[in-house]
Length: 186
Image: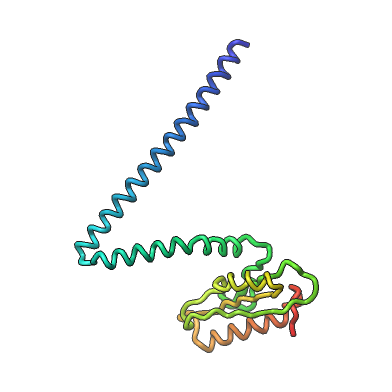
């Protein structure tokens, strides 16, 4: 019995020492990461100065970084909603091409037929993605609308006629199938 007590006490001490070592190790890692970040930042400024980039451009770049950091909480909130909300039905296939998918944003109240908004993102036919409509989908779903965000082939995956065909096919799919999700096809 005495040996078991000694082992238990020894084990408790080793667990406590392990936890304190782990906390110290974490603290060391944080200090090391901060020091490395400061060094890289300082060296980056020196390199930019040697390359002829003036302080005005560096301050504008820092201002842009601060602006992005201020917007980050909003982006994270919308991304969390997009990936984890039960109201979002992502990547519903409407055609045979890889980008022929759409997202549906459904209202919480599912009683009765709901009005439907079809959103096709812009981007000069070069860029664009269905998830870009997630904030619109969130806002309109709160107002009891169903929002369908259609994705389509962009350049160079397709020509303009392919893009028009994809969007027309997506709209037809929504009109023909939205009743399954509680939407009014009229």
